[in-house]
Length: 386
Image (cartoon, rainbow, N blue to C red; front, side):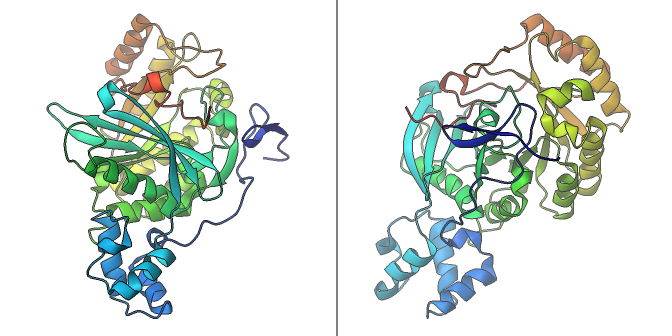
């Protein structure tokens, strides 16, 4: 991409408008954690601590299925080794700074402080009714280097990548909240994890893939969340989409498109200057061909910018040209962010956009903007502490 012009912000360094940051400002590694390691790696780590390898399986069961915090509750481990094993392999990686709630407590945004002081957010959403579920939106980077101008996270710049364990810790913490009765609705489990929080997941590829494996591996090796319940979002890093398909994780891919034409998308999603709309859509189609998992197209509707019926028609034609049955479009009414010059589309314009896509035979579901009143909806996450 050439030289990236930089300017300072309260959170560190961020690119000038339209520029990308693919290399994080910080490179420090968090302490080693059980969730960073596969089964063999855990057994090796325990053996290096002078314990029998099967102790790793016991430790995994406590962490991934019982969400134990206090080593003294790990009663199947000898009392003499509980503290040392937990201290070495279960260090504290995320600490809550504050919780903000809405929807009578069933939507909860948490600001987390990482081991080095970096800040990230996650959002837990509990749904009742005919299809009860608990969805957790997790962050994969502290900040984001993709610099999309309508996204609060993108305007903060990229501080650093998160480790696999830091990502998993957000999910384990959510399970503890449910167990402790902090979320109305009684006991429950996280059923869906969406990588739609802070950061571009595929710009932090390896830790994100490892985190997905920990989340979806059967208990006690992992958390046992259904692969179909996990969605990884991307702004369109085409080579990484192909790499994700080859990893055979079986998760849903969500492509944040926001415009069908390169001229506008270059402005709204600066990574488009590297991988154009056709390249991103072709990679998404290959993902479906490889995995059989239908792709979601995310499209933030911005008043008088990208919400014209002709753009909906163009998008419909582009998707239909790549076949039927492989894709679903999720229009998202733009969520407000501080200082933004843009706002959501008018209801009648949104309706015309949807009907135009449907006329092309494209399945469409307008995304819920749950959490927008606590700055917890799509594009609103930003680590402001005061």
